[in-house]
Amino acid sequence: MGIRFVDRRGWDCKKYDLIQKTYGEDVLPAWIADMDVATAPPIIDAFLKRVEHGAFGYTFRSEAFYDAIIGWYRKRYGFEVRREWIVDGPGVIPMMSMLVSALTDPGDKVIIQPPVYPPFFAIVKKNKRALLENRLVKLNGSFKMNLEELKSLIDKDTKLIILCNPHNPVGRVWTLEELKVLYDIALEHDLIIISDEIHGDIVYEPNEFNTMLKAGLKNVVVLNSPGKTFNMPALNISYGIIPDEEIRRKYMEIFEAIDLTTGSAFGILGLRIAYTEGEPWLEELLRVLKSNRDIAYEFLRENCPSIEILPPEGTFLMWLDCGKLNLEDPQAFFLERARVYLNNGKDFGDPNCVRLNFACSRDTLKEILLRIKGAYDSLVK
Image (cartoon, rainbow, N blue to C red):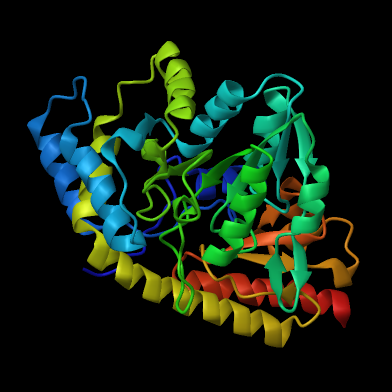
């Protein structure tokens, strides 16, 4: 099908237009987790046909929508989802916020695993829940869950664990064995696990994605969307898989109370086409992203050795540990010296780090890397 990189500028693009308006046209954005690729051709063709029809009235999710999700999990993840487990949503993060509200009370404790996607922090705090940090640890060249610390954090007021699977920003793809151990801990203490699996399709061989559902079904909620995989996050389409009937009921009460049941016509259509016709395009995308990952990793390892990097097993994001550079603010440093805008590690729970998005054209990636090297050289030489 072909992977087509596009110029994102001039379309109210948050990644490019917002940053260049704020910091200058010469700044190269390498931050927010969306890609510089056009989505899969079958999705574009379906959208064009929908536009030609001309009417954009209320749209519902037909059984073909849910069949597409079931088929995707069966083929891509080797897991059989039941239709009644699937719930609708307007986006993974809004769904997560609704679940925190539905499943806990103010003051209850929720565990997250930093460094992690910034909205995880905000969701817990804005819902007036107590935030517990079970930080990942770097061990034998890989990030691991600190399960002994996790167990020590749990008391009678601890109700939830929010998991990022695969993990954003460090790029770990959790093994089934790791997920089973986490599940056993949660089950022992009657904790609910909310697993954000939005990056589950962006996984590089020899790693293999395992949905949390494979570890167990009791007290497990999985949230997902084709938004990252097919580069259409602005369509605000997502879904949850909740085998537990009581948890599902509590979520649906909030979902229906705020009247989110009518979905986006293009989001609904996009998911169905992505999951039924988009797989060949995805396989090609993975080859391109893996090549970009390898280029970025090898370049930075060779040219910026004081920046610690582990090649991500999944996602199109790379976590750069700048601790050895003794910078007060690594993001500000690379913005000023390299004119490259990276995500600030402070937002993820680690101020010594920055996050690099390598889902861009090869030319753009090389320019970003050369600029980072120039800034690095100015510091260490």
